[in-house]
Length: 141
Image 1: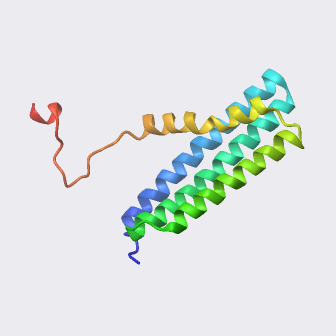
Image 2 (image 1 turned 45 degrees about the vertical axis):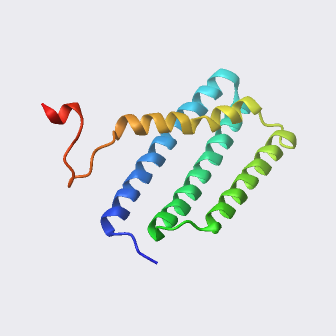
């Protein structure tokens, strides 16, 4: 097994830290807005949806990072993603059917990942690696 370089690990940690910071800020904003708009029932659903997104992000980042570090595809990754999806569906089903949480609030919470992804992309635009020369129309001028 190839271990990731310290620079790669540091970049990945910084990216995850920024992603979770953004997720926390978006969660607080969405939960506060849901509480002001429709009360505590909606805010509970938003918080559950955001928690599901956070746990899925953490699990996915861990497993994808392990696969990229080894540079080969593992069947364990597919199994872990399938189990994670199954657990997510069970939690959401129980939340809606037994705990009577607001499905609209849960969907709003689940959509937090879209907002976080857009914010992350805006804050961290793609850059070419330092050892490559930039290409495209801007490089020709």
